[in-house]
Length: 89
Image (cartoon, rainbow, N blue to C red; front, side, top):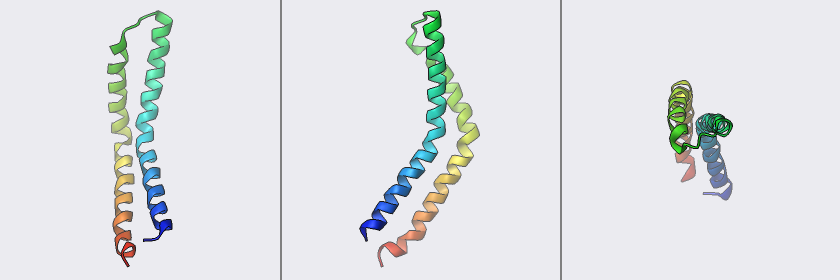
């Protein structure tokens, strides 16, 4: 296996991980920031207050982006399986 092939496989894997995880991470970041601003403005220092809104927001984001994320992962897996014969020849 050539080094360029390994680098390409690694690059594709990292890109796929970034694509699949970014919607959830951005939703969690936005909800956490919003709750943090509200806590700072109202002087409520409850650490567990942001847990339930984040959980609800991530559930909604999963229902919105889940099919797309699954499609991206399936396409990546198909691409890896198509490359298997070329890797060992």
